[in-house]
Length: 202
View (cartoon, rainbow, N blue to C red):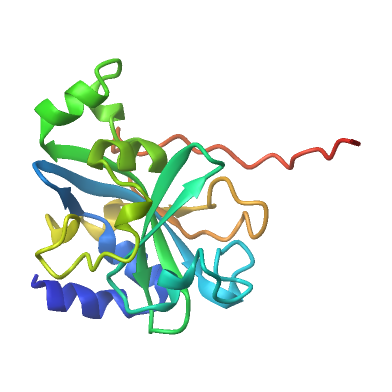
């Protein structure tokens, strides 16, 4: 599929755009990661979304055109890579949660020598670490074909192998079944329900 065709798919309702990303590859230099797990977030209609309260300096990319990268720092520790979806102005995005490294094994092996390859990109922060993604990639047009980070079609999974379940690590709308992943794929992250944080007195 051409990148223009993929951009059209990303302008669908965000849960459909999320499914369309499974089997795609995100590419940075020699490293290529096939996407095996994603989560959808529906802008200002979704209390779990960064865009729920409208545009800010942090999330402004989400309100732009589909196919761009929205990158944020999570808990001050690791970067998360999202693909902007839906129509411009809606603030929808798809978090890339996990993937399989299919090229650039020598590069990633030096970054993550302590774990087996199936766990190299098994989680959103690990995926960006494999690709070398940080906040400087925010706003990149992933479908332009010329930028430092690219999104390409790699393969098309059998629809019967695509499963849906609750999202991970969100305090609101936990049960919305917008986490999509490939059944039985060893690179998919383990599901852990969010535990509400207990407030402590100062």
